[in-house]
Amino acid sequence: MVMQVLDVDFEPPRKRAGMEVKMEARNLNLWFGQTHVLKDINLKIYRNDVTAIIGPSGCGKTTLLRTFNRMCELDGARVKGEVLLDGRNIYDCSVNVVKIRRKVGMVFQKPNPFPMSIYDNVAYGSRIHGITSREELDRMVEEACVRQPCGMK
Ligand SMILES: Nc1ncnc2c1ncn2[C@@H]1O[C@H](COP(=O)(O)OP(=O)(O)OP(=O)(O)O)[C@@H](O)[C@H]1O
Ligand SMILES: [Mg+2]
Image 1 (tube, rainbow, N blue to C red):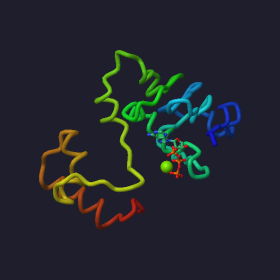
Image 2: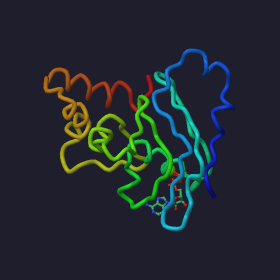
Image 3: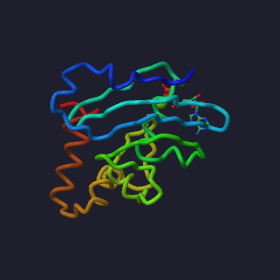
Image 4: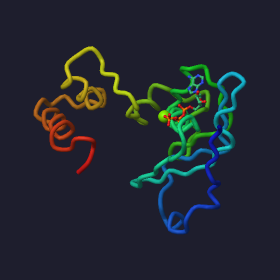
């Protein structure tokens, strides 16, 4: 089964009224070997909005998410088309992949903690973004683990 997301022409009208496009897939195709997994995906992701991608198991949801920070390349996928982040194609050869992956995070379906404490795992992302204050990290870790389990407010 392959994934087909409706073209932007089919978006509800409210999306067109002054909302900033943060990320956009344009004619995005992806193959694993001979298997054509993503076919001509055209999709806009808006800033400060929640976008849900829904479909049956194996239709390509995770694969699509992995194209948004070029993680799919790690599995040897072949990608054609564009993914724009703030208007810039992240598949340009001049793009720094590490910086893209730092900006575009992903929470995996199956948790895979690094071999260190849970505190250090939770604080990891904030630390690599330059937050060093123990007080601030304590607050963020507590917020993530205790006050908002499952990311719910
Ligand atoms: N690393 C890979 N190498 C080869 N094929 C892969 C790889 N990752 C995914 N696929 C194939 O790509 C297709 C889409 O898989 P994907 O994991 O993106 O689906 P999904 O919609 O996220 O499924 P689920 O709802 O079960 O999480 C499947 O046919 C899968 O077997
Ligand atoms: Mg998945």
